[in-house]
Image (cartoon, rainbow, N blue to C red):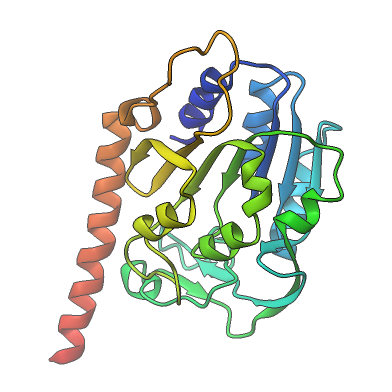
Length: 259
């Protein structure tokens, strides 16, 4: 799914040398695909989880990619970080799932995905606002921000308003359910981005376009990335089944608890 989505981004950007910020790079799976898709890419990856940072460093060895071991938030400083553990395959391995770690404490995520646990102890991680980081860079324009911050979308956006004004496309996950404490909805994300419009929306991913930045030639017509380009029907079915299974399991657990 993500590989097809990234390939769609390649068609959308129409250039081989984009500047891309990957916020929440985790173990580097998407980083590797970005590097394959764009020959002259300038890729900046941000990942605060020490476990994921170590894996990313061992996986992505490319001069075109810079890894920043920090959490992007709305302030420069330090914050508690909630590390996810668990196994979606119910193998009993409690250490393999890193992808749900967040600056936000888990809430409904614990019920919807009961197999995903969180470490009893948080870790301290350095935080920076994207605007603070961007002010130090020799970058005039960002082609794409690719964000997966697990419920911390509000922190990211509020600390990146100037950076976003220099950004052509912004792609992020979202949830209208409060998976993490204080997580904002898609409508609230839209409200924070009045100069952006949605051009791709499906399941829990949204692609925004900056309406104040001109299209690059030959993009003279506003592009629409249709949902089935980002998420083919077969993938949608798999996602739906997976989420339904998790929801049913959660409801069954609640029913047993009441007995």
